[in-house]
Image 1: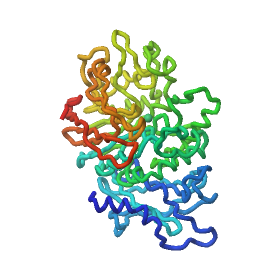
Image 2: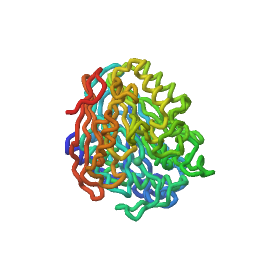
Image 3: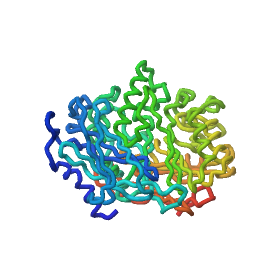
Length: 505
Ligand SMILES: [Fe+2]
């Protein structure tokens, strides 16, 4: 994308105030409802999702965004050019109060592997313009793909500069691996004001999502590329596991349902992800031609409770063969996906640390019970699944830990000399934990020789997928508690086709 295009997207918010027509008879005309920006997501070769949510007053306590209690028609357009001279689809979608006045439009029959532009119109107000992209033709390798992935954005703990820098890299696809928002109330040390109490009700979660979506850096990142999102814990509650909350709470299922509903309303998810009672089907697959298959996992909704009371533990229970972090159904789906894959790269987009991370000297291991280290049999079944299926190249993408890591995935964690069977790339946080620093945990690196990078700098990971190799650039920011940081590449690795493991560049 040219810088001119980027500027157009940037000033789109101001243009959104433009009035093109007056409203129909009956209801009073809305104030500009496009305060939360626009987004697109889950591209296939012939379709995707276009999203917006109407909120003339985004920060009202009731979470309703200043919207009246009535349905509102939303006009949308999809064009091949950003001036909308070649509109290829248009329609009207009804925004309903029971969906927080969000819309999820799913145009289909589009051309593969190409860029599109979209916008919405309500009562003469025009939204900012978003840019999106369809996946390449099935069975084709297509062009190289730049995909950026990111996680852990606490609004109060810093500025979302990393989202802006990511947008400037012109990705064709963005993966968000969870902790898109945090449930907590404001803290004294925050540099930006978190509005509302700790989120428990639908109103709380809607308001929290609205607060985040008013952020201009986040709006820009959504406006430049389609996103594929999965949650981790903080979109609901810290370290939740299926029906088990962090602390005993008889109303947890209601809380979970409220969080799921608000998550659906505020994300560019397909309509098939609309919550059903206390469930939301989040795990799914995106195919990027034959270049890459993204298996997007949900390691929260179906997992067994953390072993040994959670935390870092030396814990025999973690090795119980029946333990699962994916649930049986998702595991079958994933193993089946490995067997069917014809992709050059099979990518697991997921939440928590996959490789072993031991932090204790001596023969006993001390591991994080919230990560795959607390679900050893589950990890073995998945790893063996991709090895047995002869998946050509497996890459695990991870968020959660507020630090960047790169690791070789080993066949046997008790034998450092065992075969490398995959690669894990872990993004740092957008802001969680504040500015970050350059201290490196040397003990961790020594105890875990498969870990090749550890950095507590904030940022994101930019990947470039091609037929012959995957390149990963770890992008880091010097500060986030003040705005405007530039991003630099901390370290780059290449993974070669049919040769799992990290090669430093
Ligand atoms: Fe986080």
